[in-house]
Amino acid sequence: MSNPSILILPGDGIGPEVMAQVTRIIDWFGEKRDLKFDVETDLVGGAAYDKHGVPLSDETMARAMEVDAVLLGAVGGPKYDDLDFSVKPERGLLRLRKEMDLFSNLRPAQCFDALADFSSLKKDIVSGLDIMIVRELTSGVYFGEPRGIHKEGNERVGINTQRYTESEIARVARSAFELARKRGNKVCSMEKANVMESGILWRDVVTEIHETEYPDVELSHMYADNGAMQLVRAPKQFDVIVTDNLFGDVLSDCAAMLTGSLGMLPSASLGLPNADGRPKALYEPVHGSAPDITGQGKANPIACILSFAMALRYSFDQGDEATRLEKAVEKVLADGARTADLMGPEDGTPISTTQMGDVILEALDASL
Ligand code: IPM
Ligand code: MG
Image 1 (cartoon, helix red, strand yellow):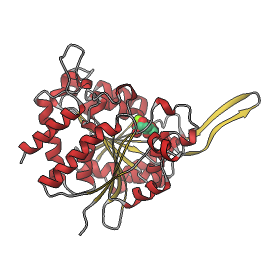
Image 2 (tube, protein in one colour):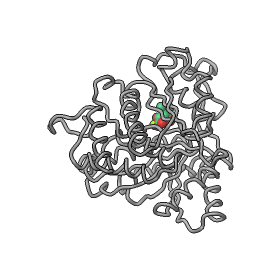
Image 3 (cartoon, helix red, strand yellow):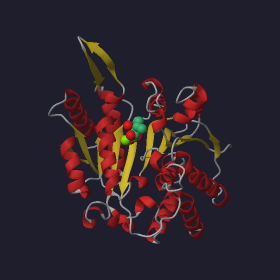
Image 4 (cartoon, protein in one colour):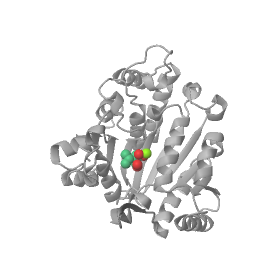
């Protein structure tokens, strides 16, 4: 049997730096755990635009459809700010999400004990935090038609459309309920049913799926603005949050910061299972390309490394090895390993991206 295949798309900014550490960890699993992967690397975002004039070539898109999992670093940067909208780096990422039909985006926000002091919230509010945001990723205002900027009389009008079908809501709701059953068995669904018809439909469909298929799971509903407030007031009240594409984008950045740094948060974007039972899948850190620190060895590789842990769990059925990697990360943090994003200005000298990779590899060795 051939090895499972991984397509690595490091992308722009700090993407290549953090991905270099993930590559070392993939190699470690090959050597020390006999978990071998066939890895290939390609371009996405601005890097793809520089070479091909588009942020994702058709060839790369085709490979992404064929491999068992895609790992992506980050896309975008100031160099590309003035590009036409249709070829902006972000369009490469959105094309992958849409064409792979990755409708369920899992964004866990977990507060490592060692970092509880570093959160901008009080320690007792975040310590032990473990929530999962399930963000719908292939529809809503990101993709709805009509869209565009056009002229009406003597001024311009910008238009985007929030649009959800029942089946789009139902499938992401199912994925949230399934996850909840493996965790705290609670789902909170967030929308704006008080002002948006799509929100009314969202609430209806989630309620119906709950009643007919998942009555054993506890379900609550919240307006998304209240949800944002509750996330910073008392985040531990949540287990799984399910929400649409745009609210999910905003709420997951907010949740990420509860954990101390955006540099800590991984994500998995999953589609429907293939014939072999594996879902189409793309794994990426929630953080962006961070052009302000690119090339300085300052970036925290942990979000990207934990994204690979999610790949081990959700694509390769290696939950124990995923836990091994997560525990290694937890251990180095407990031992005081800190990249610059995990320190205050008076806290001493941070370690570099590569040094963080070094200590995580040492912790993996120690786990054997
Ligand atoms: C995210 C990012 C993306 C989004 C951008 C880079 C297109 O913010 O994954 O949260 O808006 O979805
Ligand atoms: Mg975002």
